[in-house]
Length: 91
Image: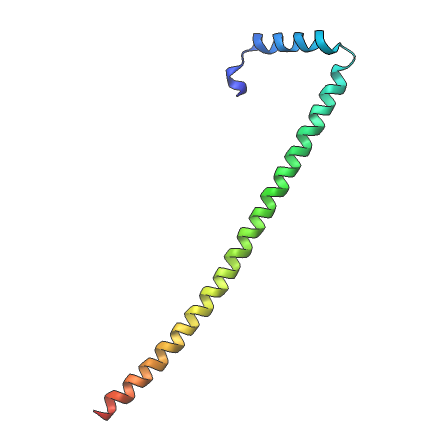
């Protein structure tokens, strides 16, 4: 969004802010904006980390679930093979 604002437009916006608020209040406004932006950045970082933790937990649980399912399938296949071997031997 800042790519579409030229230097002259930024200078004009700064001049209007200077006229509206005065030179003595601009530093406090800038500090407040910086503090707000920092809080927003920290909040988004916390949200990102929580989402990443959730995704990692889901991946871990799916991995364990997949391993358990694979083990069960192998056990069932072995039982089925044993059953078919005994049937084949009788005939």
